[in-house]
Image 1 (tube, chains in turn green, yellow):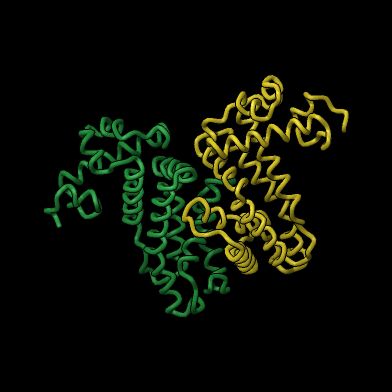
Image 2: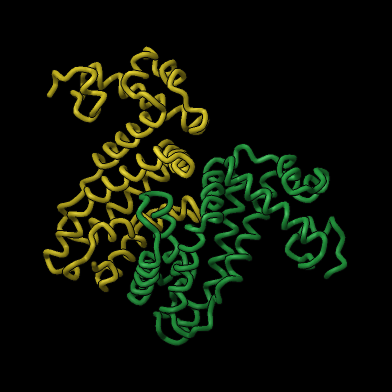
Length: 211
Length: 211
């Protein structure tokens, strides 16, 4: 719907025409918000500062995103889009390969020089801000839902037991990678990603995620 | 060594006599630090404020803990002691039961009305403060090391494949529980804990944590 007006865009920024002015403004503002977050953390995030960095009118930013939480929610939506576009989600026909792609994507995101600090800043903010927490939960719910078909395919092919909860398997792939980054600080590399994928697959085959 | 002086206590607060004045001061200060953290987050943590809350001299607090990071590190050490004292770590002789105890302990800690917010505050602080991150990593390393024997016992009994990395198994039990609390917000209850333990055990039996 390329002719949508600004107020419709505000309600659903994901539907704007990719090359249009509204999309360019969004890209500038989200880039500026990411820079500000990585530099100063979420507590100092300020819409007026973001507008200045993005060279966009303050009124535009306030009208479209309203609050820093609205901005963070949109930033998360954008990060999810970017991450998902970079890797094919399903279709290899091999559960092992699909889960490994998923694990490597999560590991690459969490260790990326820009995305990594952004994720950490958002997770930190979510521990003390309910609205940021909800945006983060939606991000994860969307991500898990998008990857679930590779597990459902494996169930349909008889590779995994009937009744396997696809969401639990996808979550099990991500969890050890987040744990390394947030809790025990052990290095997060491809080997750790592959192990997380293999462990989730083994547990799934053994029926640990049924029901 | 109950006759140790204050400066030795500062170097190793864990060795003080439990009932002594030094131990009472430590308990008051750590309780006050926890209150302040839960109320205002780590960014507003201030040694003078903690001293006031604890009704302890400011000089004592500065001399013994030095910085807020030193205080957080000691708070983590104390939380680890408390958590470990509340549940027998090993000795059931059943890997399934040991891993389940471990998972339920982690879940109980993360959902505890006081410990939960404390952990979240420390994890949030660790994302942007290197010294807090190191204290947090040490906390997890200690915890994992203390629980590893239950996995090593299972390897010795032939329940798990030779060469299984005990630390990876313990980490795998915790990871999905932290992920729920920090990332996707799904409820963390006994069922989730039991599933995390069962999944880690299945993966371990299948050899996913060898080497």
